[in-house]
Image 1 (cartoon, one colour):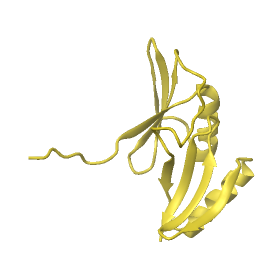
Image 2 (image 1 turned 90 degrees about the horizontal axis):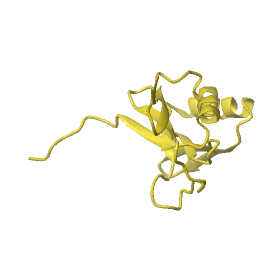
Image 3 (image 1 turned 30 degrees about the horizontal axis):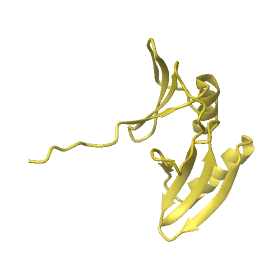
Length: 130
């Protein structure tokens, strides 16, 4: 019998400067991290996202300076679902008002996307399905 799971609980991404990344995500989301983890080798702040998934921002004591690339094996981007096109437009206005560069709303056969990047150049997207 195949075991099951119920949902995606969390995604954790590595950042170079935890303080700068937390400030960026607080500006984007409009709320603070729900909890944090500090141990001998890493520091993590967790954002409790709507829908129950957590986003962890992790700064490792032993980091490297290789920049993020969606073309390298690993993470391509994080997509945050929005309810409709009006909400997507509101996100575009919110990012613009906060001085966060984005690519504008782009239509694809399966939906509409608003793409932008965090301070570590991790690709992020607000998305609404057609």
